[in-house]
Image 1 (spheres, helix red, strand yellow):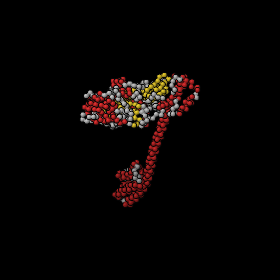
Image 2 (cartoon, one colour; image 1 turned 120 degrees about the vertical axis):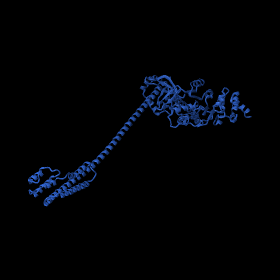
Image 3 (cartoon, one colour; image 1 turned 180 degrees about the vertical axis):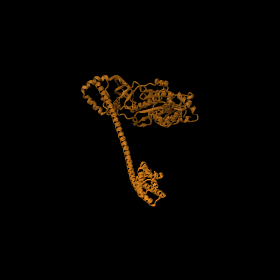
Amino acid sequence: MDFKNASLDELKQFVKEHKIKGVSALRKSALIEFLEKNYNGETDHTAEINEAKPQKADAEKKKRPGKTQKKGKTEHTDKSASSDQTVQVKNAEATEQQEKSEADVVKKPDRNKSENSQKSGEAGRRQHRNNAGRQTNRNGKRQERDHRSQGNNNRNNNSNRASNISNTNNARKDTDQENKQVVAEQTKQEVNTEKTAVEKSVMADKKTAYEKTAITDKKETYEKPVMEEKNPGFDTEVRTEIKSENRQENSLSQQESNGPELDSGKMAHGILEVMQEGYGFIRSANYLPGDQDIYVSPAQIRRFGLKTGDIITGNIRVKTQGEKFGALLYVASVNGESPASIAGRKAFEDLTPIFPNERINMDGEDSPIPIRMIDLLSPIGKGQRGMIVSPPKTGKTTLIKQIAKCISTRYSEIHLLVLLIDERPEEVTDIRESIEGPNVEVIYSTFDELPEHHKRVSEMVIERAKRLVEQKKDVVILLDSITRLARAYNLTVPPSGRTLSGGLDPAALHMPKKFFGAARNMREGGSLTILATALVETGSKMDDVVFEEFKGTGNMELVLDRKLAEKRIFPAIDIAKSSTRRDDLLLSPEEQEVVYALHKILSGNKAEDMLEDVLKLFVRTKNNKEFIYYVKKSLLRK
């Protein structure tokens, strides 16, 4: 458009209608007022119109405060509202200064017109600054409100999270408590179930005993049951329940009629093994479990105070279709005596051990030479803990057999137990056939059986011996051998994490030591004698360690010499190394004098030659009395 020749209306119309880039409505109105005052038809107003158009850089600078505000809104900066206002005011002042500099640069044809235009421009800019300040205040307040609301939201979120966490923890605690309550209820139910089962079994046993009592009263064919005997240890509750059952006359006839049906007519006899659960079984074959075992209820075990190792005799109840084992109907005898007599027996561990003071005399005209030598040089007393130290092939098994024969023939009241662990089957047969007697038992576990069998058999034997000692009886155990027993325990015990020389676990020696240490003479009466063989010079470090562990535990040692055995001199007894502790309690003064003299003579340089002379002297004499006479006459005079 030609601004030079345009009329005032055309100029005003142009300013109103055309969109001038970067020119606001306020500046348009100021420009129109300027044109109305200064228009004369001759002046060219192109400069004023162009002056109203800002440059692109100016427009961008003017827009920057707005952009900063938008960024402040979107980014949510942590600056305060006052700092944002300061920045915006500075930007407005910079814009004003730039506009002033631009206005000064432009040359105006008329001084008055330029001053008026500057005044109008300053008024517009002042109004613009005021509007910008108000907008800035609004934006600052809005940002402050947004910042506060954001902080409140964050606090609310944190509180919500904390509450959620606490609720979760509370829920978990409640769940754990519920689980514990459920487990406790289940445990109570199981305990109640077990109690009910035990009570039922007790009542069944009581009924069985009462039925047996009724049968004996009626027919007098059976022995009197234990229930009728006066037993100070008998449970009072059982007696009251039996009295209440006696009042039921109607059920008595039914019990009498059903009584004979409960008894199978068979008798059970064997050793009792009490399990950890409280019930037990009567074993018969070699003290090991079998198909013919008889079940013994926990009520009967508690009632009569039965323990592992007791020999039980009693009637067997009729086996039902679902039962695997037969059950004991009632107890007729325990260890050959009435059950009432064992009620007050004292435990083996509570008895008082003392030194052996009663000799087991094995000397006689028909006694073999090895037995005579043992009887004089290493005497055996009741309650002796003896060890026979033997290298291989020196005749230890033969010596054990001869000792067993002599004891079984001379002392019929002594209960003899021969325990063969990890032994050859033919040796077992030989010993079983050669040793006979009413109180003789040969218990064995051959080398082809599991180590668990060795362990179980040995434990049953020692428990059997303890029960006999509790009844003030004399028991002798001949063990062959304690070294093999320690090997079996070394394979069965849980590893302790420590290992001795030869691969021996120290925990494996606990039970063999407990077995060997059970030998003792009791002040209250009864004794347990154990003679165990120990292997040496086998080439195994484990055997040497076992011997060293047991070396100082015994109070009698009989040492066999390998050199004598190689020369075919039997018995190959090393007289100088064989002895008994406190032999003064067992030997007479004359015997002590001869034994001390022999030890003194055989401890010299010519021990082997003198040993042969002593053995020849034993062969020439019939008994030890004659031997003592010849020793005093010949050797002591020299």
